Length: 445
Image (cartoon, rainbow, N blue to C red; front, side):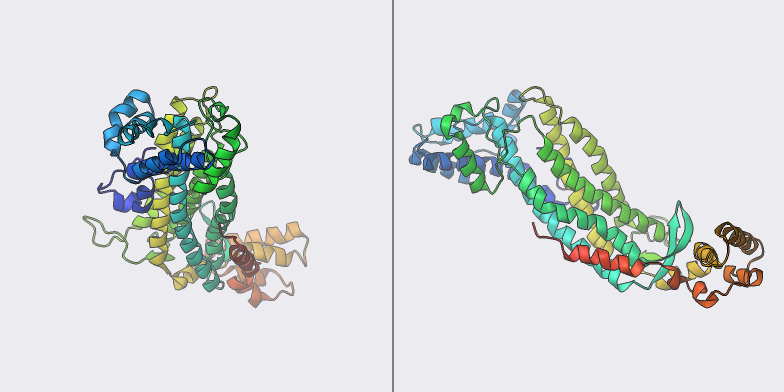
């Protein structure tokens, strides 16, 4: 695997994620491959396939890596995969009598794919913890702002009254769905690979299934229905989950960008970024980064889908494309979660400005509510036409929509209630309850 970021870049604080970077680093991948080789020898020793002394020697070498990742560059360039060079270095470090039993019955892809599942699982563990932190903060916002009235906006225009609590619940719900999928993802996508040269497990003979089962159990991975060298669905699922989280965070962050605009001012970010020339600026840096990172995961996912096009039983081109794209998705997802936590920890909800922007509409946000209220006393087309004419008058001459309608219509409506934006937020409170119930019902992975 390969990661697009390099430690020490000035962009790391903005677009990087040290935790995911560490989980997927070359050093972590090398340790994971050594762990797989040692585990394979251990289960084969349990079954009498290799000598116990050889398995112990392999475990000892694996515990003290005989080579650094950078020392394997030339061999990897020659072989197209790191495992042959790694195995050669391990055999040099092993006693002569143990060396032949290393990597028994496995192929390079078995080691790379199994170790990739281990490192991706470590990355996912860190991201799940952050995801839960994000969801907790959003649940608190949704509950705290049930009655904080604001303008809903559709296609860039003010539409009807809503609440900031419902908006926060709308940010939360996609993440709840992602979190709810984690137990299934862990069961179905993190798999041991032990197909052998062509996915037939021929080298392991009749003991293949038992070796596979024990190896999976030792590593905490699932057993696939069949070898999956050319079936990349598991990694598509992992990448898709991470990209889906980043997309949901990107939507949240884009909303924050719009609501922190100077002319809107309904949200603010404490300690926002500054400008080199304009002292008045408070740039929503974290929100910008999350949107950019979400865009990166979407772009990388298209390449990851290309990497599913393996040739025949195994392929090299698509496999290498996977190495270049999947870690980038993971890193961008982790960075998006990190930046979203920072964003939410500095988010300031300006309820007074939200209310002021609602009132500045002169009641036009109440047009839909007025149409349906009047439709109880008039044919609906007449009610809609009456409200449409009143809206035109308000836009032309000012005043408030409800006052204009009262002058034009004698229908026995509760005009004061109709004038209250909070009373026209529909089932916002009940919908928030439903989202919070879904959040509370998430299983742990």
